[in-house]
Length: 213
Image 1 (tube, helix red, strand yellow):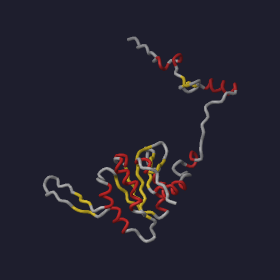
Image 2 (cartoon, rainbow, N blue to C red):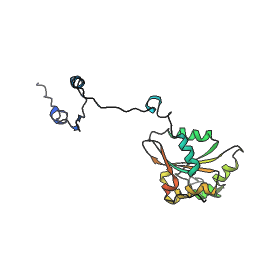
Image 3 (spheres, rainbow, N blue to C red):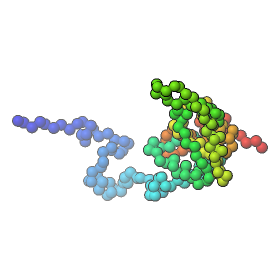
């Protein structure tokens, strides 16, 4: 039985290699590398920063600006990498400053104004057998503020998955520090390659806050 002839796909043949500029997408052979060294041409250069040597999750050179923006804007929208974990460095630095945290998820939060600042009803799951009940809970923010120790700097309301909130709900979160001066708001509004943040007023479409002289 004759062996089946093997054919090389056209996209792998040497005559049809795709190139990006003057550089082939396929790795260079040893001979090509030696010829390049003799001719004096330099290969692709890789730029490294200090975070590549000590760990990108350890070198957070913008922590000072992070603390300044927290005190200046009081409500920030953050964008963290998809793999997660980077926001923990910034959260820990706020904890060192004396802040306490209220972690909430935007999914199932309901109306933020009612849940955070007013007595609000909650209907527990009845599973089709128990009677439908309605329980009333105190305002989440006011209740946590009343429990803060005297030496606490304030309360940080950290809202995850805030990208599902409407613009009106984001506007209330941006205005919450004006209603409760000891409250700071951090809303996770999406993802980006690097950890970054913007004033929540800007994301919610509110005019920039101007200081009265």
